[in-house]
Image (cartoon, rainbow, N blue to C red; front, side):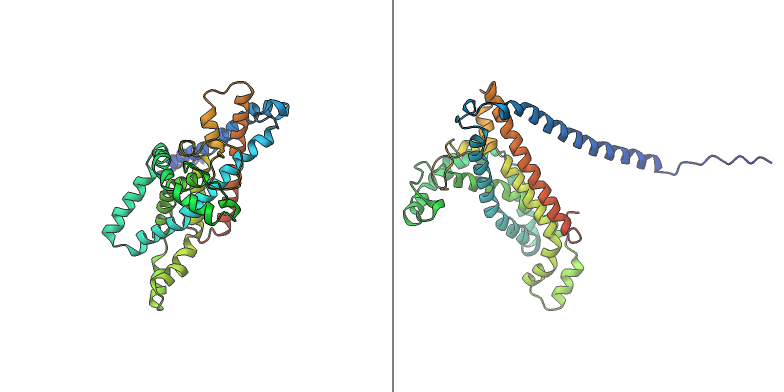
Length: 310
């Protein structure tokens, strides 16, 4: 009697599972390899800047003095954008998901998604040609009546092209991203939790505060971080609105710049050490973005049990 065991048949779908698993693993590894390659390229190309004499760097005072103003400008513009866009974006998302009639909500959702698809150069042209001219009078009023506050110190810009204008343009750009993602997270909130809160006598806002917002907390943070990434890396819109200048403490004076716009404006004509300077500036922006995303992932991981983004 033969003791040979029959060949084990492959389970249906087993091969496809293995293929998909391998493809997903390969994609993940590829992302890490590409990220590492980009980081190594930036570091290698930036090394001449770090070893150069301070007098050879733009401004003549070394790389730190050169990069510090545009880092501050980048962070200020991104902070202004988030301060304006985050509450408005969340409010718009809540209105679409829980207050607006179904037909209106569908139309508003399409409009929000469409706003996110508009090219940044369109926003920049709007900010430079229309918004900046409309803000000249408010900036003058701020300088005259609230100039004792350092960030509103005069003289106000005569063109309206300031870091505050750039921040407002960035806010308009990132608002659709925050609103669209937050809306999807709010729609995923457990319906049983919402119905239970209403059954216990909660108002609609109390229901949202107790059942929807805790569930969506991680997703809201993810949406805000994506908006922050867009604001940190934006080039054309900021380049069209701002003119390069020294670091200033006021939001309504002309001047200042962001890293992305500095690179976009100067890279085509750059060569030699100047090219290495701009790549080193890109390395700084890369590190800032990486740090922001790491902090965001840490915050989300603390609330992942409630997050609709996990």
